[in-house]
Image (cartoon, rainbow, N blue to C red):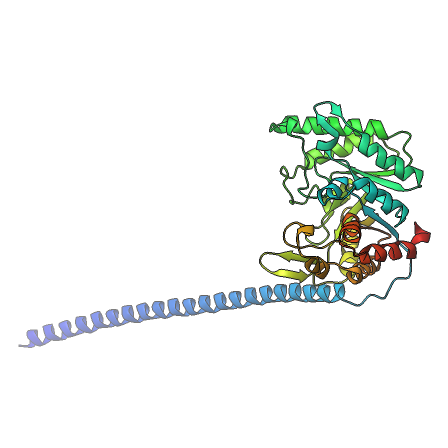
Length: 389
């Protein structure tokens, strides 16, 4: 009996010992689980802190960007006082467009010189009109324009390339065909012919414009080709180092860097009111300081100090062919008051040369629509700035 009690005591002791081990094991497991939970909570807290810090940094960046945008938008819309300083006033004359709207282009050209007395003119050289067949040239119209300008002491920017002013922007002769390498070689050969013909004994030509807005994807044209532009600029400099080279670009939606860094003089367009199928008529929401800021931008990043307005809006921007629209629609988009306001706006940008777009249309309004208001306004603008011309 005593042996049985002893055995019972031993068994009880063993069970207690086993129970303690189990309890210790459970406690250890619970401690480990608790540590895991604590670690998990710590990790979650750290992740939350990290996310909070990240969001704070993102918020600061976005806030800073928004502040910069707001400050910039505020700056470009600050009022700019009227400029009394006179500017060089010029225009672009396109014999092609004059013909397209039914004018006697020679008559219109002479009227521009003798009645408006414009003395700064950009003349496009249309490749397809001058080189009518491979190696066959017709310079009669261009020679006549240059001669008339020279007789009156007018100064000419001669614009050449595959892309020159007026729609559809590119004027590549049909005989060139579709071979890309051939087109480039033919273009350089054409430009060489132009340069060799006019670089001497033509004091009326004051600068060369290589292509028109070659870095702007606009018009019915081949793809933008910086290497080709570089070849054109290099050839022009090699053949005539006496005249500066101008490149141009759109005024509103581009940074200007590419053409500005390749040219001696950079020319910008300047359009204040445009029309699109989606938004209809709308005006760009900025003032003259927008263009002052862009001038500073290219001065810093393209080392370009010479910026001029080469194409100031002076003609309607409407859907379809301009002269096919009702005259009321045309005059809603552009009239004598808007023309004067646009010139005043351009002068406030600080640019000293302003070439106004639309002289052919003014003459069309005067002679075909018996509405000389724009023509007379242009005459007043030229006369008011005559001492700089």
